[in-house]
Image (cartoon, rainbow, N blue to C red; front, side):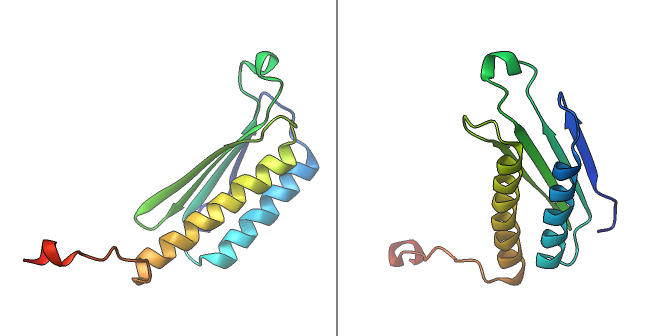
Length: 118
């Protein structure tokens, strides 16, 4: 990565386990795509956490050449930050694969109808 990882905890205390997991998942993304410019990860609870039941949210922004890929994930009713992080990074993995496919021209192209050609 060109820039160091930005990891922010909002309305929650950072834990060693969460930090370790985020760093491991970022390393996996780096293996998937060689030129990641930067990555910002925010893990936290919304300001209205008392009303929402302390459901953790994970926001992930990945900067790659020419584009910024983003994921926002809130993990259901369990309130499990580890699962929310896994799910957010799984969604980002899909976005990176789609980005790479578009860049290499391997993305599925919608077929033109013969009517549109004439």
